[in-house]
Length: 341
Image (cartoon, rainbow, N blue to C red; front, top):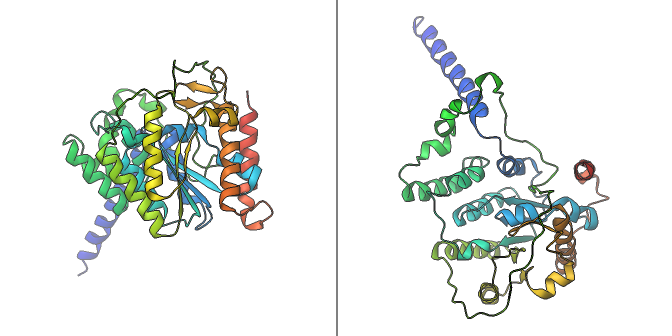
């Protein structure tokens, strides 16, 4: 027995050192990505403190500001968004989020409904989202779907990202490596805005009927309907959303409206002429590129969306509530950052 104690101690010490070293190397070699950080920072929000949860891809990530909606109306929101977000990831993020929060409204960006997601080509986008997620049954289900579609990707590499990123030593200077832990708290609340202005112009005949035949991607429709059903099961209001994107079409908008009507939920299309006029969007000023708002555009979009949500759902105003003092601090940081040149 006396000989076994040192062995147990040595094994325990080895395991501890290994775990610490493994964690440190993971933080050093993982790509430090804003989207990953914002998805992870969601976990720091106090339980049941978010009134509106928004799920979707990069137009949402770039185009909607929770802090500006809070400043104007006092309700809280969080964007769990990432570039080219896979339908399975959207559902996984939603289901996981509802373990931590009980929002009054869930906003689902619907751009991916007509897009056949390629887990091989979009591996980088997958990892931006999933590296920020804690391990859970929801993440495991996504991993299983990804690895079934692409045998080159392994479950181990999603659970322990170092197994995917360890070869980054070839492209970076080891002497400059620093451990970069995932962001714990965010004053952006999931948004990653873009400052640059890239003057655009709407395509000829934009949002006019063309007779185009559009079809939902089966996988995307499956997860969207599953997301709607989950929210309705929990008594959460659902809004389907489309944000400005010049590759959108009248026929896609009509298909989305039909889906919304099927589930008796509202559909907001920011690319209709009426909506563009209400918001005051100018393609030469408010776009970063043809598919994303810049900072100025996001201010206009957030102003309209915040007003709609506050009025339609009678959302609470937390601005005088001491329990939400951190939001006031975060708002000041956010506004100060916006004003930087």
